[in-house]
Amino acid sequence: MPGHTDTVASAPASAHRVVVIGSGFGGLFAAKALRRADVELTLIDRTTHHLFQPLLYQVATGILSEGEVAPPTRDILRRQRNARVLLGNVETIDLTARTVTSTAAGTTTVSRYDSVIVAAGAGSSYFGSDRFAEFAPGMKTVDDALELRGRIFGAYEMAELETDPLALDAWLTFVVVGAGPTGVEMAGQIAELSRRTLKGNFRSFDPRTTRVVLLDADDAVLASFGDKLSTHALHELESMGVEVQLSARVVEVDACGIEVQDADGSRRRIEARTKIWAAGVAASPLGRQLAEQAGIAVDRSGRVPVQPDLTLPGHPEVFVIGDMMALAELPGVSPVAIQGARHAAGQIRARMSGRPAGQPFRYVDKGSMATISRFRAVVSIKKIRLSGFVAWLVWLAVHLVYLTAFKSRFTALVHWAVSFLGRGRSQRTWTWQQVVARTGLQRLEQVEPDATRTELRSADR
Ligand SMILES: Cc1cc2nc3c(=O)[nH]c(=O)nc-3n(C[C@H](O)[C@H](O)[C@H](O)COP(=O)(O)OP(=O)(O)OC[C@H]3O[C@@H](n4cnc5c(N)ncnc54)[C@H](O)[C@@H]3O)c2cc1C
Image 1 (cartoon, rainbow, N blue to C red):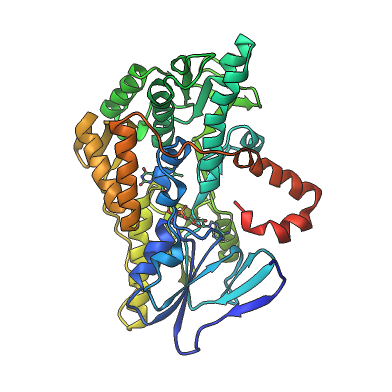
Image 2 (cartoon, rainbow, N blue to C red):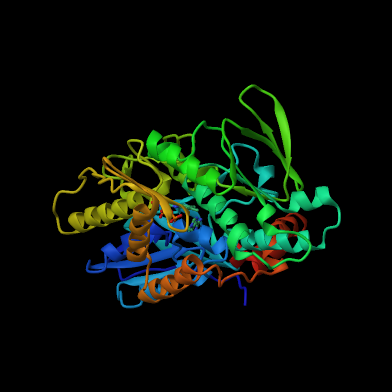
C-alpha cells in the first residue's frame, strides 16, 4: 500500500483555492462555514476524524467509544460539494510558493492555495521534560485516550495478580497531573470507576481502596473558574475520595512513580504505576514554521501572534486560528476555535466578493464548564455561577448539542444512561497493543527510521 508518488492537488485555475489544515474544531467549522462559497476547498488532516476533545476522558475511562467522539471527517462533509478531504501529515507550508506539503504512508501531496486556514491545534507540553511522556501520557488524541484506557483498566488486572502489598498499592495508585478541567474530570471519573463500576469485579483486593491523587503546581483546582467554583470543586473531589495536592510541582516521572516538590522545596515520591498528564499545552510546530517565514516570534506556548483579523502579519491570505493563535489572551478552548473559524471564512468570502476585509475578530465568551463526576459539575457563564446537579444538566445539554452527528448524540445518550443511571461502563475493552504501541513506535523509529516513515506513517500522532 505505501508508495512514493508525488501528486499535486490543484483546483481549476478560475476557482479560489482554500486549503484548511486540521479537522478539529477550527478546521471543520471553517470548512463548513465556506459551504456556500465559490471556492475549491481542500481539508488536510493526519487523522481521518473530527475529534471532540472535551469528551476524550470518557473514552479513556470506558464510558464512550472512540467512534462517538471522533466521527469520520469525510462523512461529515459528504454533502459539501466544494470540499475535498485529504489524509496527510502537513510537513511544510511555503508562504512564498503558496503551497502546503503533506505526506501519508510515503505519498507526498502538494496542495496550492489562494487562502489557507491553519488550525493544527496543540499537543501536550511537559515543560521541557519530554522524557516524562513515556510514563505519563497526555490526552490529546484518540490514541492517547485508548492507551490511557488500557493503562487504567490494565492496572486493575495487574493488581489482581500482585502478591506484594507495596507493589499492589502502586498498581492501585493513580496520579493525575494538572487540576484544570481535564485533570479534574479524569480524577473524578477514576474515583467513580473504582467506587462504583468495578465493585465486585476482583477477588484479591477491593477496588474501593484505589488512591486517586490530583496534583497541581498552582494553589487552586479549576483556577480559571474563580474562587467560589474552585472551592466547590475541591470539596466535591475530596468528598469522592480524591486526594488533592496543590502547590506541588512534578520534578521526575518513571515507570513506578512520580517525584514531587512542594512549596517549601522539600521533595517526596508517590509510588504509582498509572500517571496521566493533563498539565500543559504546546501549539503545533507548524506555528513556528509560519512565524519564522513571517519574521515574527511565537509565544511561550508556541502560538502564533496574529493580527486582529486572525491573519499572519504581512500575509492577509494566511489565517491562523484556534489553539495555534495568540490574540488578546484568548484561551485555548473550542468556542475560540469555532468562532475564529467562522470569522476567517467570513473574511475570505468578503475578499472574494470585493467587500472590505480585515475586520477584527470579536470573541463572544459563552462561559466554561467542567464535570466532576456523574450529576456534579461546575458552570461559569458571564456572572452566573452554577454547581451540582443543575450545572451537570447544563453540561449534558451543551455536549449533546455540540457532539457532531445525530448518531453520536443518540449512542452517547444511551451510554451516559448506562454509566450515570446504572453503574456499568460499556467501553471497557482494551488491548496490550494500545498500551505499548506509542513507545514501541518511537523506539522503532530510532532504530529503523525509514521503516516507520513508509510503513507506519499513518500511525503518526
Ligand atoms: C482533553 C481535552 C479536553 C478539553 N475540554 C474542553 C472543554 O471542556 N471545553 C472547551 O471549550 N475546550 C476544551 N478543550 C480544548 C479544545 O478541545 C480546543 O481548544 C480545540 O479543540 C481547539 O481547536 P483547534 O481546531 O485549534 O485544534 P484541534 O481541535 O486540536 O484540531 C487540530 C487538528 O489538526 C490536526 N493536525 C495537527 N497537526 C497536523 C499536521 N501537521 N498535519 C495534519 N494535521 C494536523 C490534528 O489531527 C487535529 O485534527 C479540551 C482539550 C482537550 C485536549
